[in-house]
Figure 1 (cartoon, rainbow, N blue to C red):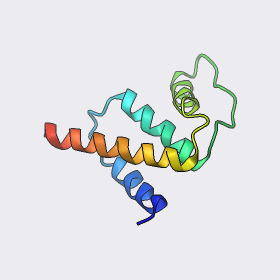
Figure 2 (tube, helix red, strand yellow):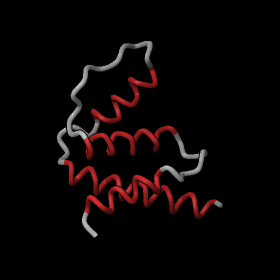
Figure 3 (tube, rainbow, N blue to C red):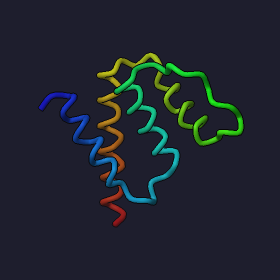
Figure 4 (tube, rainbow, N blue to C red):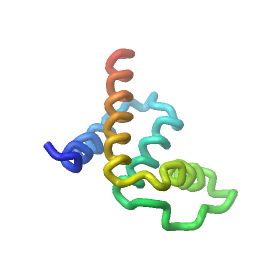
Amino acid sequence: MGLKEEFEEYAAKAKTLPPTTTNENLLIIYGLYKQATVGNVNTSRPGVFKMRDRAKWDAWKANEGKSQDEAMGDYITKVKQLLEEAAASS
């Protein structure tokens, strides 16, 4: 299985993460997903009153400079970790 196929598999599995997954972890995988699928941030930072959008933008920006393959690998690793933690706590 290639990296892209494995990435798509874990993107689907990420949707099954429990609701107890922290916002911090959700933002980490969001930022990695965006970097893997879009590349570097290509929009301006949302205004101060759009806190949710701003947090998502910051999470994406934190991955700036990573190659798309590197971001895919990091995404897969993080989702695996979160799924294992969820399984261990249930």
